Image 1: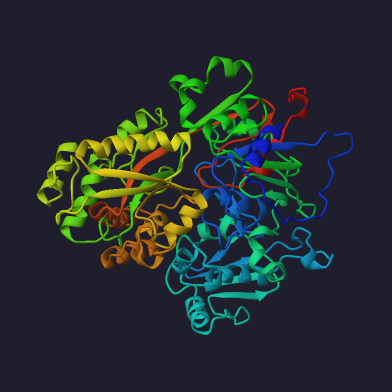
Image 2: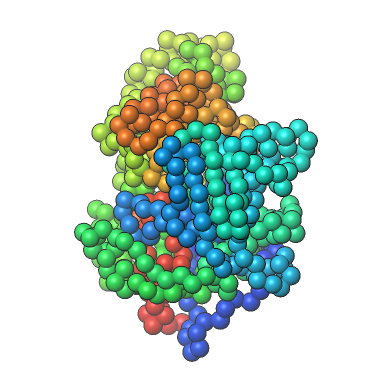
Length: 610
């Protein structure tokens, strides 16, 4: 997010023609307490947001925003490790049938939406009907929700039929009651599922996607709903300058919420935070200002110049300066800056469009081409050089901090073997046929890989490693530079041959990452457009199984299919280092949840004098 003094950053954006004022809520925020200076949390995103509608966003940074503006039925204890689900809009944990096919949830009473013109100046209470409506929006084909395929896997009775009817008629019928998603009364929601779903609770705990919305707001703003987030969370949008600056203020209608958590007894940091914060009214800051600074150097300098309160994920380019040997640099420690370094629940990956005539396909020579490229990529070199030790080589899809992760698991995915890669290419006829030094296709046409990327310094360093490794096996690669939102849109439409992305786990469940290969998710989260009936059957099977060794085996079996066909090259699991200024209090990275703004405070007495 953004600088303490953000005039230079804004001036730069103005010079680039990036500022574009958008509609935002105009209700004045609650003022800070009398004689108290305003508390403002400022930091930066490295990638631009795409909007603020939970049903439509899928990128990490937009979902950070929506998670702090909207509430779901459940969420996570901020300090508990391992992650622990707690009630948010629900008044208690759900009543769950023994077969995991019926969940009944009772809502808190008196929870209000943030003020908005859609409510005609009147307070608007959250009801069970709002929960039903918000979930149905994800199923509405008009919204093209990237989250629908995951929601569909929950198999809420009648929801898929309602969607099919909307596809046929061109209109989604929100008023038709379905058995699988019902408001039993004003404050009770019931979910009935076609199959056992032992982890539905994790789905219901993601405010970034299942944040509850009011129908009046959606109908008032229509196609512009991405610019008008109105939730029940602790903050509301005040100002939006697209791809540049976002300002959020306290929601004056936010419910009574006091700090409480359950950190492990042996977590000294967590216990200290709880002792300092327990019982305090949330949120503690008055305003949050988020900047978009895509280049690592100006983002780093903004933190060093005290313009930002913390550096969320230290850019890898500056790891050797800020955390030599993974310890905080003495010059930063003398300033009172602190750090937290943890393995992230994530993967980074390259994908190939399986419908591409050159790099896609399922025949032996197409599979061999992708596997050869994957074998030729030296992920250890990526960890050592551009990432400067801030990652570990990934051997599969399953992420750290999730239930099925095995740090000892090894596979071809994490193997670097240049000789084997070249032998595979030779065997299947990918050789230099015209003597220009580059391999050609078996039919003699040039073999050229087009990789879409960003033009920032950190991406350039990663691309250099990729090019070096491809040059070494004689595969020509061209780089096409673009902007993240446009690339994401093109990837979903199947218009990119190859792209590199990251993915973070939003729950402790290891299964959802496999959706990247699920046939029904093509065009949504399955950017590679991979299809395999055997894989789909395993994906569905694991989703119905309780956690444990048997489910782990099914997940690994499904994962091995993806490794064999190689629609994705999983590169690394990143290690995240966050740096905090001495006046930022209470910050601790959660392995899954993104809604942390309300849990931190600013000690205004420690702010540097201007």
